[in-house]
Image (tube, rainbow, N blue to C red; front, top):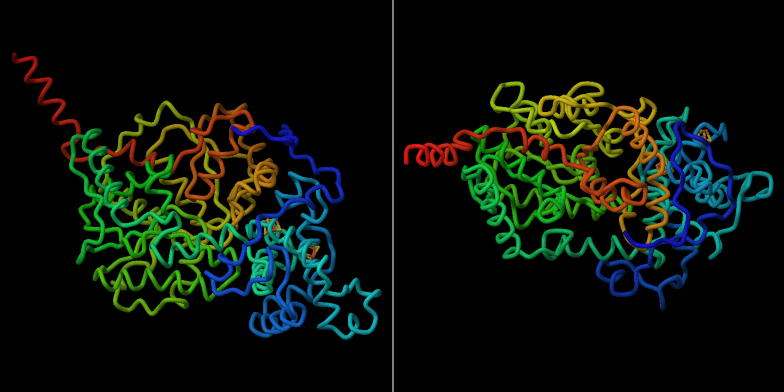
Length: 516
Ligand code: SF4
Ligand code: SF4
C-alpha cells in the first residue's frame, strides 16, 4: 500500500453528508494525452499537453451544436434542471471529497453555463441573469478536472426527478475536450492497443496462448479433470468475450476458471478469440460512439471468422453496458448467430440457466469459510440488465451466489441495487494519477461494507466487474481491510462446482495405497 499525503475519509455507522469544502479537489486531474496519444486516436494535438489547438473555441462550440442536434437527451438535460437539489448529496465523489463541484448539478453546470451563453436567447443577451459564462481556457481547465471526477455511474440520475443523466453530460464534455487537444492519457493510451493487439493490456497472442495453457494445467492439478480454455477454435458453439484482466489478475482469473468449469460441465463447446481478447470498451469512457463502434466491430469480425453461434460476455460492468445497449445498433445485425439465445448473453445468465436446469453439481460447503456480500456494479445496476425481468440484474447475481454459498448478507438497502455506490474507479478513472480521487470516492462503498462486516460477520465482497475488482483490490487496504476480501462471482462458482471425475485420481491413489 503506497503512503498517501492526504486524509483517508472516515467510515461511520450511518452516512453523513460532508461539509462543503470549496476547491478541495480542484487540483485533481488525470495526465493529459501528449501528441503521440492524441495522434494515435486520430485526435488533434496542441503544441504541449494542457495547451489547446488553434481555433479551439469555435471548434468546441461547433461540436456542442452538433451534439445538441444529434442527441436530443443532451439538449433536454441542458434545459431541464430546476436546481431542486435532490442530486447534490448522491455522488460518491462529493460524499468522499466535500468539493461542491462534485455535486452532480454543479458538474452539469460546467457545460450548462456555456450552453446558456451561446445557445439560449437569455444567455446571449443577459448572461448575468441566467448564470451564463464565456468559454475561456479557465472554464476548459475546470471541465477537464471535474469531468474526470465523474465515473459515469448514473447514481445521480436515479434521484433526479427529471432523470437528468450526468454520465451523458460527462461523456459529451470529454469527447469535446479531446477534440480541442485535451484528451485523457490513460484512455487514449489503452484504446489503440485494442485496435493493434486485441486487448487493453497489449497482451500478444503467444503470451495469451501460454497463459491459457497454464490455466488448463492449473485446473487439472486442482481437480484431476482436463478442462479446456480454448483460443481461436473454429466451429465452437460459443465465443466468450471477457475483460483481459481475467487472463492475469487476481481475483479476475479465478472467475475465468469458473466460466471454463461451467462450460465444461454443461458440455457446450466454446472459445476465446485472439482478435477480440478484450470485452472492455473504453470508447464509452471518452464519450466516443465512433470508438465504441470500432471496438465492437472486432467482436463481430471474430464471431464471423470463428463461425460461432452464440456470444457470451464475461464479468465486466461497462463492457456489458456497451454490449447490452449498443452491440446491436453499433455492430449488428447479428443474424448469423442462433436467435434462440440472447444476443449478447451475460455469463451469469448462462450459469443461472445451468443451475436452474440442474446441469451443475454444487457443493456449497466449499465456500463455508466465507460470508459474502455483493457489490452491484453501476453499469449493470443502472445502465443495463442481466436476465429478462424488471430488476433481474439485482436478483440474478444474488441467486447464483446463494446457489453456491451458504452464507450471504446484503449491505444496507440504500447502498445496493439501483442505489449502489460506485467503486470509485469506474468511467476511465482507474489510473494511478487519480489515486486520491479513487480512494476518497470509494468511501461510501467502504462505509457500507465495513458496517456489514462489523454487524453480520461478512468476510468477502463479490463483484461482477473487472474495474470494481481492480479498484477494490487497491483501495481496501486504505480502509483497514485486505485486498483478498474482493472476489469474483464465478470464483465462488468455481470453488463449489464438482466436475465429473473430479477427485477420482486422488481416490484411486488412496485405494491403491490402502491395498498396498
Ligand atoms: S454519474 Fe455518478 S460520478 Fe457522475 S456525477 Fe452522477 S453520481 Fe457522480
Ligand atoms: S436532481 Fe435533477 S433537477 Fe434537481 S438539481 Fe439535480 S440535476 Fe437538477
